[in-house]
Amino acid sequence: MIETVVSAPAVAAVAVHAAERVAGVRVQPGVAGLVSSVVRAARQQIKGLQPAPVEGVRVRWSDAAVALEVDVVISGQDQAAAVARAVQRSVRALVPELTGVAVESVVVTVVDVAW
Image (cartoon, rainbow, N blue to C red):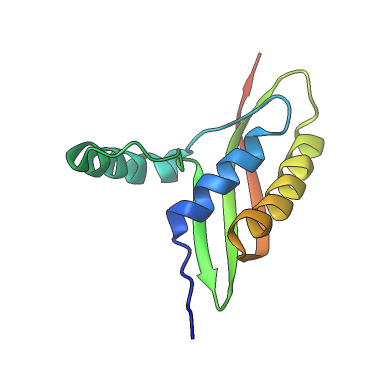
């Protein structure tokens, strides 16, 4: 029997990539993600690692699927609801494709608008 384990940071990195494929979107940690991103950055610097960005995405496991929360900054030229739906579709499609992990839900929070 072979068991494959995909870590939360790997899933988060794919979610960041998927979200940022949507035009006018940048993933950015909200207030809740700032502390964990500082801790992660310090740990990586100590280990000499340069991993893919995961800040702005929170991963919660439930059985064999993940629930993802993505914080984004969008362009002021676009409608927030439409962009959030596009981010949800992109993340929901790319995470299973690249990781093999099923996606239970994708919650997108627009934390800022860039003009």
